[in-house]
Length: 133
Image (cartoon, rainbow, N blue to C red):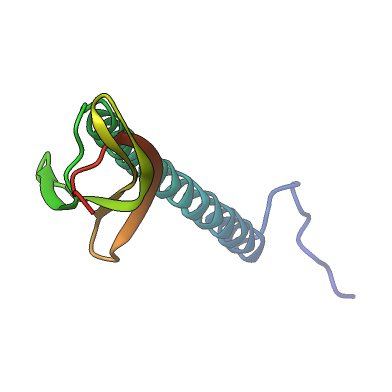
């Protein structure tokens, strides 16, 4: 007769090792998801700040009573590189009391990061013409 040792309801070493492997795998997936979520949040924050910089520079340029064609570059907070480009795209045929009017295109491009991310905003404005054609 073969007698087996009675089990007292515990787990075998193999069952404990398999359970720890499953738990470890679940934790690894969870931490990976957490890291991806935090990285995405940081990227969203940096992008929102870049859009804010671009909007501020666009509004400041459009607030000017006179626009002069050309490109101006800035570095903002040491992190964002921006470029403001003003182009005169048209001139009125008639003159008013202040002279000819010009149609201007204003573009602001803000770039950041090693991967050269950027955001661009543009607008048009009518101001006194900077050239007498």
